[in-house]
Structure formats: structure tokens, C-alpha cells
Length: 147
Length: 77
Image (spheres, rainbow over the protein chains, first blue to last red):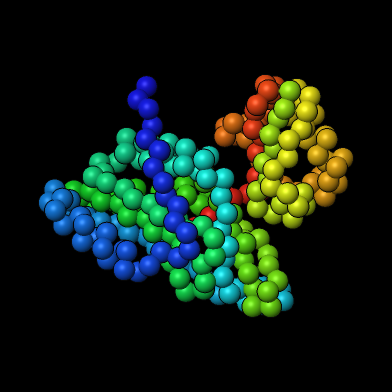
């Protein structure tokens, strides 16, 4: 069996909007691509008992998450005709309104990119060992739950 | 024989540490029983276990140097 390639997906703090523009620009040389599907996760100011969310602090079991991500990546490349796939997830503190997840999937035609992107976001949320602690405006905290 | 235990997310509120070394535990049931004795709040907690980064559903025999992770439901993204 081919050795899975482990790539880092974690980045400290928020993902800057400029990085998203730069990454799109970098793909301009790959002229076989006809479709990019992008998902951005933004930290939401949810109201909780005792306060409003100010930030999320992310932690992960990084070795296991990267191993699992490599598996998900292989599965999606086998299932869809993709040209490339990039995932960036924040660790540490990300403030409300900032980007904590950037998923970028490219293919020749739109359907593969759109479907793979959706499946990838669900897999990231439910299969990667990552946890978010919501920091409230009164400095209390509560553990985030994915729906 | 030493086994390394890792705790993540809300479980670290219960254990107050993210890593423990335990001795002479030959399977995951023994580890669980030991931890639930030491941290009674774990009994009410929902969590998954992984041995050497592989999720386990049933009791698993341990070898020296194994790493057992205790993980609450994931909440990334």
C-alpha cells in the first residue's frame, strides 16, 4: 500500500483573509482547473448562559488529526476527480468574526469540487480530533459542541 | 510496563492534566476503572478512546509504550 502523505493543516491563530486571496492567485498557473470550491468557517458570537462568545480557543490531538486527515484526503481523491485540496484549521485563540477554517478544493468541472468540498467539511467537523473552547465576554468558558 | 494516557478538550477540566503515565495496566478496561476511581466525574462524561491513534470500540490489550487517548466528542471547524 502506498504510504499516506502527512501534511500539516494547523495554523496558529486566525486565518488571514489575505491568505485566501493569495492561495487563489497561486492556482492561476494550473490551467487545467475549471472550478474552485471554497468553504470558510467564521467564529460566531453565540449567546450562551452567562455571556456572549468572544473567541474560540482550539486544541487538537495533532498527530492523530493529521493522520486522519491524510486518510480523508485519500478517500476523497479516490471518489472525486479532483485536481487539488487544501485545508487550514486554526489552533489557539480565534476572535469572533475571524476565520478558523479554510477549505479549498479544485477540479476540472464544478460538480466534483462542490461535492467533495461539502463532504470534506463534514469529515473535518466530525472525524478530526479537534476541540473548541468558547471564551465568553465575562471570561467564563464553555466547550463547543458540533451540530 | 508504562502506558501513556492523554486527555483532551473538556476531559482536561476533570483530570486537570493532559498527560499521565500509569504502570502495569494490561488492557483499556483496567485503565478506565483506574481513572474513574481517581476522577469520579469521568463516569458521567462522554468520551471516545484511541490506542496509538486508532479509535477503539471494545476492550483492547495494551503493550508497553502504548498511548491511550481519551477524547470527548469533536468540535473542530
